Image (cartoon, rainbow, N blue to C red):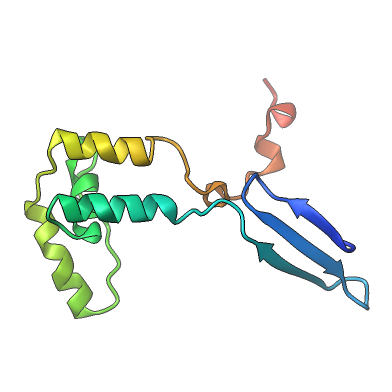
Length: 130
């Protein structure tokens, strides 16, 4: 994408402003605040607090509660992080907490469209054989 002093809306998530550089190929983008993708995280943190657990414990317990998941892959950076995640194994989230999680972040919906990643043009309907 080449931008020349124009404002572009990207995927309905915020606005980016770009300038074409002096050599004709440098592009500088700066984000102008749009919808706040951290809002659901704050709601989930509050729910975790109300449920008497930490957000990370609730997140891991949520994953482990899913019937199709046998294990959760975690990525702690320090022993302290790892040890703080152990209690999640013993947490059984009640249905009302699970329902509230689904209200905050609906199943199958990306809160931030940028998390969907790049989709190859070869996978678009127009490029398919059938």
